[in-house]
Image (cartoon, rainbow, N blue to C red; front, side, top):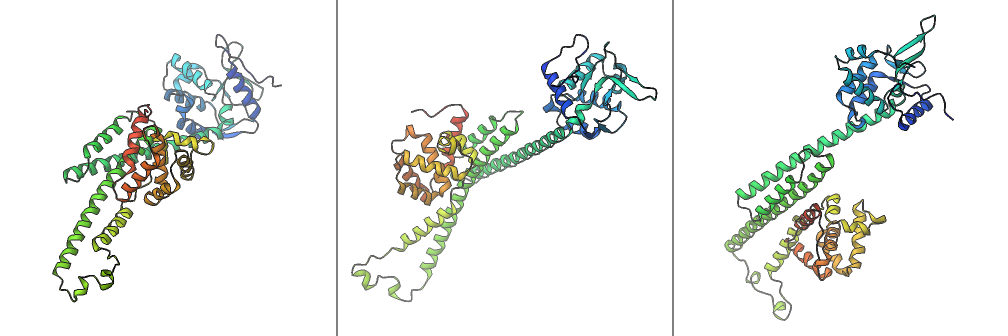
Length: 414
């Protein structure tokens, strides 16, 4: 049983179980604890918002620390300071008495200092004949030394969070700039595409971002903006590839037309072809090469996993333990969903070959999310696969549509 370690406040100030718990915790762990008081103060300054403290509370704590003569807080020695309100107010830059008392109470509630009140509520100390303090009544700074390691870790977490937040905002600023300028360039140069819809999506993403956003909100907006940027780049890449293909075809046509044939056999089928072997037309061969080259050029990019799970939350039910944390778990869940929706293994294998396994899994997640609107999941997947092979399909618009519905708090209706 712990006794003799709890000090109740003087006067009308009430005692709470939280104060009892805090005092007992400090009493149990204060042996041989040392800490630099100004380093602890800097750590508290870094994490003041998490501790629920205002700037002026830090000014009061700074003033209290100046009344302790040493830089090192040592729990083996007395850590009680006992300035009067007048002295404390003076070192806190002339803070009013009511304000001073309010912030002292905040420091006590945050567990950074403890009250050691005398019988009459005054702050003073008893000294021996040598002038050494035997008993002091005032504010005990022991919690600062005892919690120094905890406060240092908390400060590191706050700094890391602030850095992550800053980098997320920087990345969003760059991504916004990229999307804005790419859309403008596409419109000004007459690139094919529904750029009004893309523009609306861009504006909608920014409208959903609060003025004073949290890091999580900024990162969520960044995911959506990166998806939109990928969509814009995919459309522009398709246009550039089509222009290059057309230019190469025109160049080859002029080359054949201007070339002087060396032999009639170069322009006519051989006798074996005439006897039944089908001649493969050169345009067909060129077409296959173009499609293959186009597929490799237009390979659909994998989207952020977090964005996919926000757009298609139902797929998480089929992951290990009802959640999905990695791409391999999404791919495994997609195989389960494929079987459940009656999609044949061959249809899913073709989709993996055309889109890649990650994007095929994303497609299955989208189909699951819209399953009550799709009559044949297998037929729908084969259609997406064929369009992907021709370079006419992208998962982006499908994911964007599901994200908008998810953001509105709705579900796809049957």
